[in-house]
Length: 521
Image (cartoon, rainbow, N blue to C red):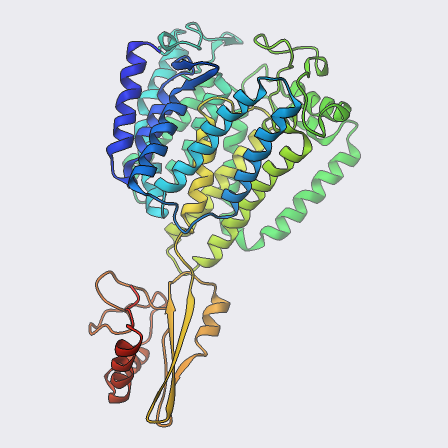
């Protein structure tokens, strides 16, 4: 690690350690993106890249401050933990030093993910990160465009990247601080839809984000990021027909089966015919998938340490493996079908959480719902991009950022029903309180059946109540309109009449005295 890398890493670590939680993810992302893999500290057999160093400082911060994940572990968290355990466990069936690489992989990837889970607590935090990335990556996009224009990588002094970038059809392919131009383009394709989401609310930041995303994709001159962006845009376009996704999925499956039936080659060889930048290697990627099926007996159980014979070409830095440009297939090579299946389960769990978040937040604003949808579209683009690249450098941080964001947008607790029964003058009173505002319409209708009952009156409680910071929606004396669905004037006055009644006041005094009743905030 040179002096500039040390100072930059130290500054990012100090900011990560001292900034408030809502801003802590910023120095982590900036520090990880702008430093190459050449900036590394060697400690025995372990190599600590800038990302791994920042993960260490982040974990120390979380432990010292007692910060926690919003609403505890979700299904993505649980499956990722199982995936990490299996990844390390299968090292016993590989080379003697395999456990060092795998522990480093878990440290950087799973560590990054859980730090994001701590730092991103709600949808406001996710939106803030969108804004930061759109603005904070402007220097990166500018330097990559300059690299493409003049043929010089300005990050070369940090190591692990070529000073003179590769060329394709006479055009330079900029890679910036990333390990390859395709991985750089993946980051650009991830940022582009963030800018689209911000277009209405933050126009200037959105324009900056469009420059960042579009500029990085153009500078890298690769078909993979372009395809990833097209899939993301397709996912965003489905927003208007989101209620018909089941039919669209079945239709897509039918088309894939039909194409696989009528084509001479397997359907994944379609990528061999796609070339947006000239000189695309789609055929190589399709043939790699086919070759993995042909050698399934070598890796299905626990992976393999040798794939060089799968293809006619291989990595220049590894004599044991061919160029494994498929992220899902890499999971299979590392841990066989079990590890690959767990990774796929993580992705399925993420999409299920998106579906639940959309249902539980259907009463929220369109901006909130579209943020959830945007995260799903970005994840969809990443999955489609897995067939063309393996995320092995700092670009993988953006995948786990999206997964953590999916957990953050549904961190608020759903409606819960609380019932207390007390007897006053031999009259039993059932009191129902509804906490939260993000439940499905069907469940809300069930809550509307509940009411305050007595021998003299029946007053329905309006249950879709929006909670303000300084007033309790059940006991507020203000005339604010609290309902997200426009609580009617009659309902408001019915609630006020119920509150002011002598009978209700006696119930309230009794509850406060006997069970130390707390207002729901």
